[in-house]
Image: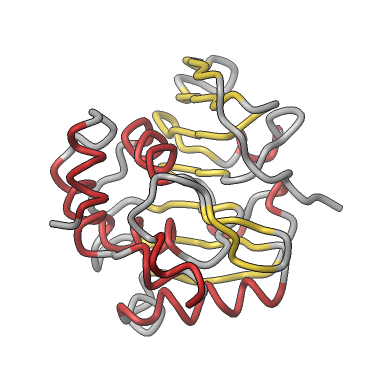
Length: 205
């Protein structure tokens, strides 16, 4: 187990068995530019090029614990960047699940796809990468059990809420607070807020 995973467990950020396993098996170093490889175990956001970052590991761990993804889930990963969260999800959902990764920048979409396929998840069909406006979601593959947005929005896009299954969960940074929504009905959601997070802006059309 890496120093990063041990530190996240000690901090109480990582708790769930399959999520802990994913963080242990899918090393962050595989998703970083070479010049930042030595900082892979640091609990900080790091540049991945094209004005974007790979998120702080403790923030990613919290988002995963809130979403509680499980084997067989269908997941939408908005702002997939260099592919780390997509690969983590692909590990968790297993062969019967599916992860749709949406990225606004074409160069990063290609990088994320390449990095994720180091684990054969693209070849196996567990993960698919698309270029597009993440605020619109991906209706062709909806509804989703979980939706993760790794970029800061001004408001929660209605399209993402509509693309959740009943019982589905959405985590999105809004004005630098993490917002958790759980869909109880078409009109009713459980909502929780976790302030004090910083993310790059969500790029929309």
